[in-house]
Length: 245
Image (cartoon, rainbow, N blue to C red; front, side):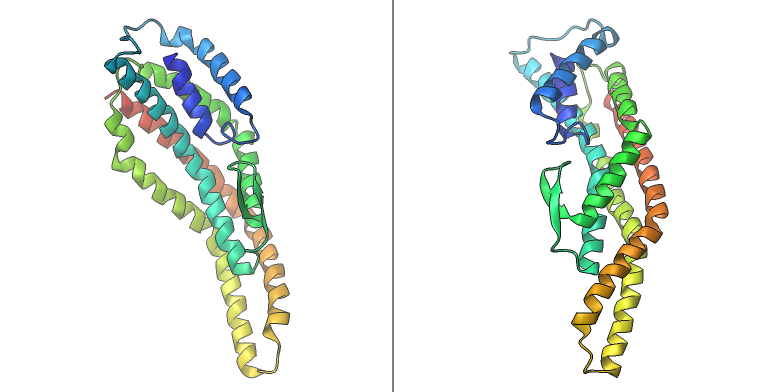
Protein backbone atom coordinates (compact mmCIF):
# COMPACT_ATOMS: atom_id res chain seq x y z
CA UNK A 1 0.00 0.00 0.00
CA UNK A 2 2.81 2.44 0.82
CA UNK A 3 4.54 1.74 -2.50
CA UNK A 4 1.22 2.24 -4.29
CA UNK A 5 0.64 5.57 -2.52
CA UNK A 6 4.01 6.97 -3.55
CA UNK A 7 3.56 5.73 -7.11
CA UNK A 8 -0.02 6.99 -7.31
CA UNK A 9 0.92 10.46 -6.08
CA UNK A 10 3.72 10.56 -8.64
CA UNK A 11 1.35 9.51 -11.44
CA UNK A 12 -1.03 12.28 -10.43
CA UNK A 13 1.54 15.09 -10.51
CA UNK A 14 4.08 13.99 -13.13
CA UNK A 15 3.92 15.16 -16.74
CA UNK A 16 2.58 12.77 -19.38
CA UNK A 17 1.28 10.36 -16.71
CA UNK A 18 -0.77 13.05 -14.97
CA UNK A 19 -2.38 14.36 -18.14
CA UNK A 20 -6.20 14.53 -18.11
CA UNK A 21 -6.07 12.48 -21.31
CA UNK A 22 -4.82 9.56 -19.20
CA UNK A 23 -7.92 8.44 -17.34
CA UNK A 24 -7.98 7.80 -13.62
CA UNK A 25 -8.54 4.08 -14.17
CA UNK A 26 -5.44 3.84 -16.36
CA UNK A 27 -3.37 5.70 -13.78
CA UNK A 28 -4.62 3.48 -10.97
CA UNK A 29 -3.88 0.37 -13.03
CA UNK A 30 -0.36 1.57 -13.88
CA UNK A 31 0.35 2.54 -10.27
CA UNK A 32 -0.88 -0.86 -9.04
CA UNK A 33 1.14 -2.85 -11.58
CA UNK A 34 4.33 -0.86 -11.00
CA UNK A 35 3.87 -1.12 -7.23
CA UNK A 36 3.61 -4.92 -7.53
CA UNK A 37 6.78 -5.01 -9.63
CA UNK A 38 8.62 -2.85 -7.10
CA UNK A 39 7.77 -5.01 -4.11
CA UNK A 40 10.89 -7.22 -4.49
CA UNK A 41 13.04 -4.07 -4.53
CA UNK A 42 11.41 -2.64 -1.41
CA UNK A 43 11.52 -5.91 0.54
CA UNK A 44 10.19 -6.46 4.03
CA UNK A 45 10.25 -3.53 6.42
CA UNK A 46 8.94 -2.89 9.88
CA UNK A 47 6.04 -0.52 9.27
CA UNK A 48 3.66 0.59 12.05
CA UNK A 49 -0.08 0.14 11.81
CA UNK A 50 -1.40 2.44 9.08
CA UNK A 51 -4.46 3.39 11.16
CA UNK A 52 -2.25 4.74 13.95
CA UNK A 53 -0.72 8.18 14.25
CA UNK A 54 2.72 7.01 13.12
CA UNK A 55 1.17 5.15 10.21
CA UNK A 56 -0.72 8.27 9.15
CA UNK A 57 2.55 10.23 9.06
CA UNK A 58 4.20 7.58 6.91
CA UNK A 59 1.24 7.61 4.51
CA UNK A 60 1.53 11.40 4.32
CA UNK A 61 5.25 11.07 3.65
CA UNK A 62 4.71 8.79 0.67
CA UNK A 63 2.16 11.15 -0.83
CA UNK A 64 4.44 14.15 -0.40
CA UNK A 65 7.42 12.34 -1.94
CA UNK A 66 5.44 11.32 -5.02
CA UNK A 67 3.93 14.78 -5.42
CA UNK A 68 7.32 16.49 -5.00
CA UNK A 69 8.97 14.34 -7.65
CA UNK A 70 6.13 14.92 -10.09
CA UNK A 71 6.03 18.65 -9.35
CA UNK A 72 9.73 19.13 -10.09
CA UNK A 73 9.23 17.61 -13.52
CA UNK A 74 5.98 19.48 -14.12
CA UNK A 75 7.93 22.74 -13.87
CA UNK A 76 9.73 21.87 -17.10
CA UNK A 77 6.43 21.95 -18.99
CA UNK A 78 5.28 25.04 -17.09
CA UNK A 79 8.37 26.84 -18.42
CA UNK A 80 7.34 25.94 -21.97
CA UNK A 81 3.83 27.28 -21.38
CA UNK A 82 5.24 30.53 -19.97
CA UNK A 83 7.55 30.98 -22.97
CA UNK A 84 4.67 30.43 -25.38
CA UNK A 85 2.44 32.88 -23.55
CA UNK A 86 5.06 35.63 -23.65
CA UNK A 87 5.73 35.07 -27.34
CA UNK A 88 2.02 34.88 -28.22
CA UNK A 89 1.22 38.14 -26.41
CA UNK A 90 4.10 39.93 -28.11
CA UNK A 91 3.27 38.77 -31.64
CA UNK A 92 -0.46 39.45 -31.23
CA UNK A 93 -1.75 35.89 -30.87
CA UNK A 94 -2.68 36.09 -27.21
CA UNK A 95 -6.37 35.81 -28.11
CA UNK A 96 -5.86 32.51 -30.01
CA UNK A 97 -6.36 29.94 -27.25
CA UNK A 98 -6.58 26.17 -27.35
CA UNK A 99 -7.05 23.42 -24.78
CA UNK A 100 -3.86 22.08 -23.27
CA UNK A 101 -4.34 18.30 -22.90
CA UNK A 102 -1.40 18.15 -20.50
CA UNK A 103 -2.99 20.36 -17.82
CA UNK A 104 -6.58 20.71 -19.00
CA UNK A 105 -6.49 24.52 -19.22
CA UNK A 106 -6.65 27.08 -22.03
CA UNK A 107 -3.25 28.19 -23.34
CA UNK A 108 -2.20 30.17 -26.45
CA UNK A 109 -1.58 28.18 -29.60
CA UNK A 110 2.11 29.05 -29.42
CA UNK A 111 2.31 27.45 -25.97
CA UNK A 112 0.50 24.43 -27.37
CA UNK A 113 3.10 24.14 -30.12
CA UNK A 114 5.96 24.30 -27.63
CA UNK A 115 4.19 21.77 -25.40
CA UNK A 116 3.95 19.31 -28.26
CA UNK A 117 7.65 19.77 -29.00
CA UNK A 118 8.56 19.36 -25.32
CA UNK A 119 6.44 16.22 -25.01
CA UNK A 120 7.99 14.64 -28.10
CA UNK A 121 11.48 15.41 -26.81
CA UNK A 122 10.56 13.99 -23.40
CA UNK A 123 9.36 10.72 -24.93
CA UNK A 124 12.08 10.50 -27.59
CA UNK A 125 14.77 10.62 -24.89
CA UNK A 126 13.01 7.85 -22.92
CA UNK A 127 12.87 10.17 -19.94
CA UNK A 128 9.59 8.60 -18.80
CA UNK A 129 11.48 5.31 -18.35
CA UNK A 130 14.24 7.06 -16.40
CA UNK A 131 11.56 8.54 -14.15
CA UNK A 132 10.28 5.09 -13.28
CA UNK A 133 13.86 3.98 -12.65
CA UNK A 134 14.42 6.92 -10.29
CA UNK A 135 11.17 6.16 -8.54
CA UNK A 136 12.21 2.55 -8.05
CA UNK A 137 15.55 3.70 -6.67
CA UNK A 138 13.83 6.08 -4.26
CA UNK A 139 12.57 3.10 -2.24
CA UNK A 140 16.14 1.94 -1.69
CA UNK A 141 17.45 5.37 -0.74
CA UNK A 142 14.42 6.44 1.29
CA UNK A 143 12.28 3.45 2.34
CA UNK A 144 8.74 4.11 3.57
CA UNK A 145 9.75 3.42 7.18
CA UNK A 146 11.45 6.79 7.59
CA UNK A 147 12.07 9.86 5.45
CA UNK A 148 13.54 13.28 6.05
CA UNK A 149 10.76 15.51 4.75
CA UNK A 150 12.72 18.70 5.39
CA UNK A 151 14.62 18.06 2.16
CA UNK A 152 11.38 18.41 0.21
CA UNK A 153 10.92 21.89 1.66
CA UNK A 154 14.52 23.02 1.22
CA UNK A 155 15.42 26.21 -0.59
CA UNK A 156 17.17 24.14 -3.25
CA UNK A 157 13.77 22.86 -4.36
CA UNK A 158 12.39 26.39 -4.36
CA UNK A 159 15.30 27.64 -6.45
CA UNK A 160 14.36 25.12 -9.12
CA UNK A 161 11.29 27.24 -9.89
CA UNK A 162 13.60 30.12 -10.78
CA UNK A 163 15.41 27.83 -13.19
CA UNK A 164 12.08 27.21 -14.91
CA UNK A 165 11.67 30.96 -15.46
CA UNK A 166 15.25 31.15 -16.78
CA UNK A 167 14.54 28.34 -19.26
CA UNK A 168 11.35 30.06 -20.40
CA UNK A 169 13.22 33.31 -21.00
CA UNK A 170 16.02 31.57 -22.89
CA UNK A 171 13.41 30.13 -25.27
CA UNK A 172 11.46 33.36 -25.70
CA UNK A 173 14.21 36.02 -25.72
CA UNK A 174 15.39 35.50 -29.35
CA UNK A 175 11.82 35.88 -30.60
CA UNK A 176 11.09 38.83 -28.32
CA UNK A 177 14.24 40.61 -29.49
CA UNK A 178 13.27 40.19 -33.15
CA UNK A 179 9.70 41.37 -32.53
CA UNK A 180 11.02 44.36 -30.57
CA UNK A 181 13.14 45.45 -33.53
CA UNK A 182 10.09 45.12 -35.83
CA UNK A 183 7.95 47.20 -33.48
CA UNK A 184 10.64 49.88 -33.32
CA UNK A 185 10.69 49.99 -37.12
CA UNK A 186 6.92 50.41 -37.19
CA UNK A 187 7.21 53.20 -34.65
CA UNK A 188 9.69 55.04 -36.86
CA UNK A 189 7.39 54.51 -39.87
CA UNK A 190 4.45 55.93 -37.93
CA UNK A 191 6.41 59.07 -37.05
CA UNK A 192 7.58 59.47 -40.63
CA UNK A 193 4.16 58.85 -42.21
CA UNK A 194 1.36 59.55 -39.69
CA UNK A 195 -1.32 58.81 -42.29
CA UNK A 196 -0.17 55.16 -42.47
CA UNK A 197 -2.64 52.80 -40.79
CA UNK A 198 -0.14 51.02 -38.59
CA UNK A 199 -2.70 48.57 -37.18
CA UNK A 200 -3.77 47.33 -40.62
CA UNK A 201 -0.16 46.86 -41.71
CA UNK A 202 1.66 45.99 -38.52
CA UNK A 203 -0.65 43.31 -37.16
CA UNK A 204 -0.26 40.73 -39.97
CA UNK A 205 3.44 41.56 -40.39
CA UNK A 206 4.06 40.98 -36.68
CA UNK A 207 2.28 37.63 -36.76
CA UNK A 208 4.14 36.46 -39.86
CA UNK A 209 7.46 37.64 -38.45
CA UNK A 210 6.68 35.88 -35.16
CA UNK A 211 6.13 32.56 -36.90
CA UNK A 212 9.32 33.03 -38.91
CA UNK A 213 11.29 33.80 -35.75
CA UNK A 214 9.82 30.75 -34.02
CA UNK A 215 10.97 28.59 -36.93
CA UNK A 216 14.45 30.11 -36.91
CA UNK A 217 14.87 29.79 -33.13
CA UNK A 218 13.45 26.25 -32.93
CA UNK A 219 16.84 24.43 -32.98
CA UNK A 220 18.03 26.51 -30.03
CA UNK A 221 14.73 25.99 -28.21
CA UNK A 222 14.99 22.22 -28.70
CA UNK A 223 18.51 22.23 -27.27
CA UNK A 224 17.33 24.26 -24.29
CA UNK A 225 14.46 21.83 -23.68
CA UNK A 226 16.80 18.84 -23.83
CA UNK A 227 19.18 20.40 -21.32
CA UNK A 228 16.31 21.46 -19.05
CA UNK A 229 14.76 17.98 -19.10
CA UNK A 230 18.09 16.44 -18.13
CA UNK A 231 18.57 19.06 -15.41
CA UNK A 232 15.11 18.19 -14.06
CA UNK A 233 16.08 14.53 -13.84
CA UNK A 234 19.27 15.51 -11.99
CA UNK A 235 17.18 17.58 -9.59
CA UNK A 236 14.85 14.65 -8.94
CA UNK A 237 17.86 12.44 -8.29
CA UNK A 238 19.38 14.94 -5.87
CA UNK A 239 16.09 15.26 -3.97
CA UNK A 240 15.82 11.48 -3.73
CA UNK A 241 19.40 11.30 -2.50
CA UNK A 242 18.71 13.74 0.34
CA UNK A 243 15.47 12.10 1.48
CA UNK A 244 17.23 9.45 3.47
CA UNK A 245 19.47 11.89 5.31
